[in-house]
Image (cartoon, rainbow, N blue to C red; front, side, top):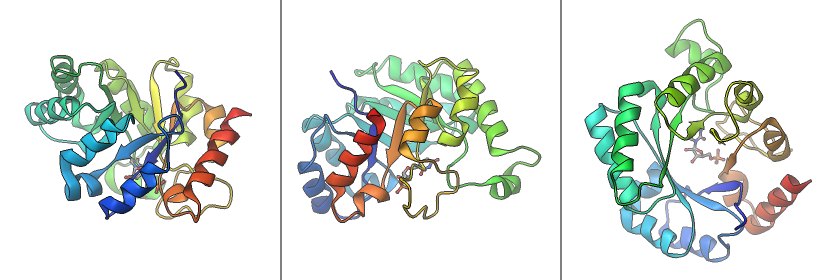
Length: 232
Ligand SMILES: O=c1ccn([C@@H]2O[C@H](COP(=O)(O)O)[C@@H](O)[C@H]2O)c(=O)[nH]1
């Protein structure tokens, strides 16, 4: 079956608005991402409703805690039936391994587990406030190596790091990239951005797009145009 490359970030504060948008879509056009806002507002039932409509759902809760807590959270997420879930790579290898083992022993062991490296909203100066002496690319490469060592399926990074990552990691290692902006789109709070075709050429596995689609006058037209731009 055709595997859509775009993951639409459903960052709405209104469930009916989100569902009205989803009902105009088709699971062959995109996957869906539920993040902290919608999960906090509408909970597991909202996630289950999207899965029941046939969508692959990425539950983007970016767990970051001690291994026991993250493992239990990942097991609970997997058992909702989600396609993908994530943790922060900076939680360390034991935490990532505990999460992986918990998913493997869940009722939905095929759930993919990826790790967030450096948020796409951070540039070099912001990163320097947190960890000194490294560029975003160096830190992403370091955390990607840890993630692979822990046996996870891939990482969240920006498309700007994709070609350097592909020199070290095979195509099976998933690169899931927010900060995707079509030419002329407002970057908003995103700092490390790339256009959809350039991201695909750089070796990205899945492109996460929120506002450029959801805030557009005709979101379906934008999504279809992005999909078409990936085919060329
Ligand atoms: O590093 C990261 C990790 C997650 N995100 C999430 O992706 C979307 C991006 O939305 P846009 O509206 O296209 O900016 C959003 O849900 C973030 O929470 C990220 O942007 N960067």
